[in-house]
Image (cartoon, rainbow, N blue to C red; front, side, top):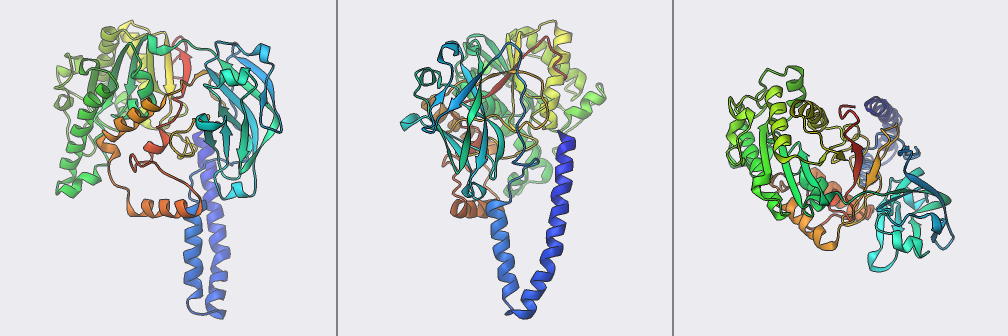
Amino acid sequence: MEARKQQLLRRHRRNKRILMVVALPILVALDWFGSWGTAPVVLLLAWIAHEAWFSDHLFYSPKDDYHYDFPADSLSLSVRIGRDGVVSPATASLPGTADTLMLAVHIRSSWLGRWLDPNVLVGEGVHRDRQDFERSVNGVRFVNLSGCLDSLRDGRLRVRGRFCRLSSEATLHCFSNPDYAGRRVMVIAPHADDAELAAFGLYSRCIEASIVTLTQGEIEAKFYRRLGLSDTAAARLKGRLRSWSSHTVPLWGGVPPSHCVQLGYYCMQLTKMEGEPCMPFASRESGDSDIRSVRRFNPFKLPGDVDGLPTWSNLVADMAALLKHFRPEVVVLPHPQLDPHPDHIQSSRLLHQAIELSGWRPDVQLLYANHLVDNDRWPMGPAGNGVALPPCIEALPADKLWSPLLDDQVLVDKSQALAMQHDLQAPLPFKKRLRRFIQWCLAARRWPLEGEDEFFRKAVRRHELFWVRPLERDVSQ
């Protein structure tokens, strides 16, 4: 994936250079033959057009198909979408236990879909869902129909494209899962807020949930420098605030402080730590080197509390001790192939090594993606809507899917859980605020009122989405 991203990035930069070479003589000609103000006006209009329609970061072509392989035991059905939008499967073949439904369908944008976000409307009335896709889309996409099984079986489910057209032939992928909220669940969060972004709906329903936060989240503390603090003091304050959030915010979802653990390691250092397991790696920005500074609210002592050194050996020993203490049957953590953040990738490697050390092996892992290597707008579209599958241009492991539906009250609670996170309350820079205003006016995009951070739009959705992977498979893959 990273190689493909770099290839498309080079192509994007090359096209920008070609455009500049072509545009320069045109601007010179406008300035020479037109009035003195023509060229600046053209430049301003070009910049506005760029911010409105061409500033999305897509490291793939909208004309690429998404490619997903699913396990051999999952059910795939051919369906037909009529002119009236009714989805017509072989009704008798639909399993009554299917909780997650994904419709693989070719979507082609209309000419308006080059300027306004194409979207698929699922259902009708107050329960109608909307799932957005890339402008100029022309390929296979996966629409999330989870929660629509009854209307699909009754022949009442309609899907229709807005600013796009759907092919009449499609494939419905059906997955049946147990309700993992009924089992002992451990959410592994590389940073404070990762648990809420990915799994607030899940852990707020669990009969027994624990949340383990790996790092303090102290870097990129520019906002706190406005308080007159030095760089190190600002980073230290941010780390303390986010560590506090990792203990307190889960209580809003019913997880008591006795089941919340902050390990206190440092952001963007986990990869280096694994490379030299016994070498301590201090914070890059706060200068701190003792992880015990944010561990005082932990419910019990851990191996790393002995010397407080930020080493990989201590981190693995801490996680092994937590596995033995909480004995989770299900672990929830970032997807090692889809989520590109280095700390998120390392969480899978950490889990694998901790399992080997502890001897406790959970049954299954539920994988989430809070970041995406290919498209930084996914999930696309306004808050409160469903979650379509993310871009997948290259092959991934063939995992099952689980996409539980969240009711309206849980959506409100999830948005407020995010509002409690200090890191998601920093004001937008002027450039981003101006870009949003331009897109609001010209591209009809909308953002939620609960908060300005992009995660209020991306994470507060009708569905949460997990890839289901048995732990018999090597989690370091």
